[in-house]
Image (cartoon, rainbow, N blue to C red; front, side, top):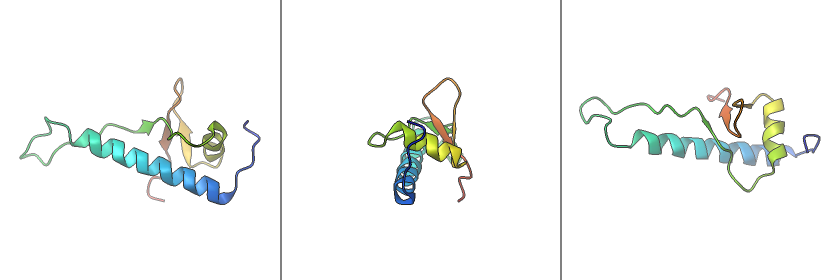
Length: 85
């Protein structure tokens, strides 16, 4: 499956979905109780997630080859590289 070709639009849609899921997971983690009302909260420790369903596994491998994602060894999770771009 790694040799599948994906269009630029498919890759962009998948990456956008990944970024949105990562952002929501981080916000959910930061909003948990115990952050301290007077300390400004706490930062999330989440760096990687399981990619959103609805996309083939090969698309995540293609994004990894392009240097946009990095697979976390021993899991099916990926972390975002170059989060500012």
